[in-house]
Image (cartoon, rainbow, N blue to C red; front, side, top):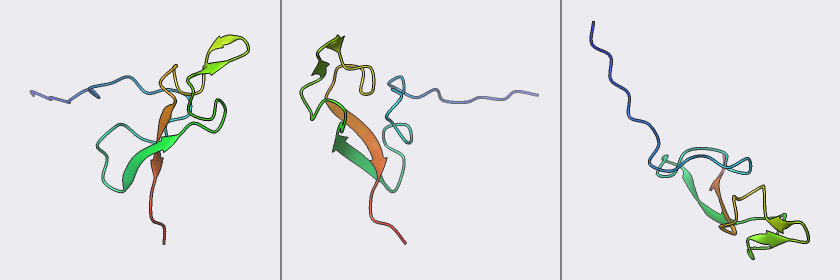
Length: 60
């Protein structure tokens, strides 16, 4: 049996709700660092220092 799975192109950060490119998601500004990518302790751990998180958009 040959199973193939495609790993996410980018690793998930703790603040990401889904892998990048997942239908129904988009980039949002990290609520912990306000989009700066940094906190007083250094790089933001929530967004991995990017200032962005992947979150669900829309809603039902």
